[in-house]
Length: 145
Image 1 (cartoon, rainbow, N blue to C red):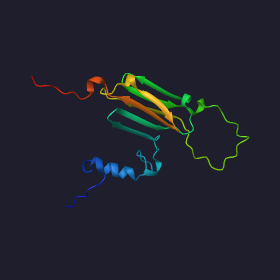
Image 2: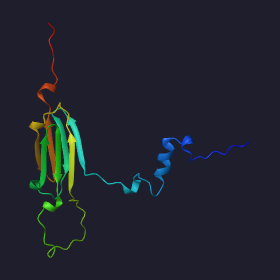
Image 3: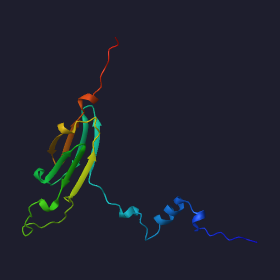
Image 4: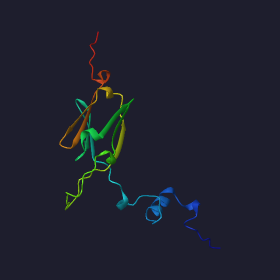
């Protein structure tokens, strides 16, 4: 007697098989590569002075950007509707490629950085937020007694 195996029987399908099958399915819950949202441009790096966030804010006035520090959370947001409306009667755009869309970003900052001493400045459309190391996390040396 020959047994027929149903390849879609859950007893014979691994989670990886379901993932791969759903990835190519049109009604899949997984995002297709062409449907990806491009996140707001941000560079985050650590150097000898501490942690630095560089956030692209081209064409956005610095007073329209909100920065909040709560416990160990850094939040940076901008709501496009806060900007005063330009009269479009005088302007004739040939191309509009500068992204000025709203964003709401947030990061949990490690305790080795002192968030209460953070500093922010705007330079040529680049918001730079620097957070120094906390005093207790700086390298120390011990003398042997």
